[in-house]
Length: 251
Image (cartoon, one colour):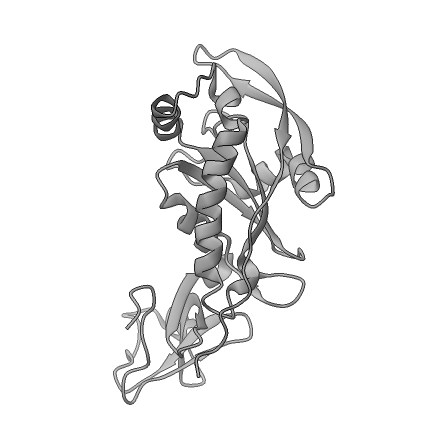
């Protein structure tokens, strides 16, 4: 058994993954129809298969793993599925990570912006005698980069367990100089990242992550607590992350 998978198909249940990564199911227990909603029934049931709307992969042990909603999944240039939120949520399990934006759809590899959790990393810095003056100062410290690199390394090692997810390992990352904020339009009021806005606003950072330099400069406008707007310019470091060869299919 693996706690991070659905498991193997039950007897009499057929499961397949469509070309766009969606999980399709056929079984004797499949529902007949949506109540008074023929259109939804027709959309969900096609050619005898139930279209779940979820994206998934088969692990090397032939377990089904759900990775995201199918509409939110894309592919890397090598054709492998890439689920941004799946990778992001793995990193956000670590106490030192507050927010993550992973990039990879249409790219050769995966990179990421990371927001540190100021409270958790601040406490860690205090315990380790590391002084700092602001969020920007703390996030740019080499010691903090080392701390977050350990988290990224653990995520990459876990992704390498499954051949179909190995390509989603984070190759390079940077620590953002400010927290993503709903007041700046970067998050919804429920805390979800506005991906298109963030990608447009931080295009220079994306270019830096896929370039060859080890630093990138960015200027950002943000809203102060009293409603005034201010600008922040910072030079951010870009760190290569340790990646792993796929573990390989089980014998």
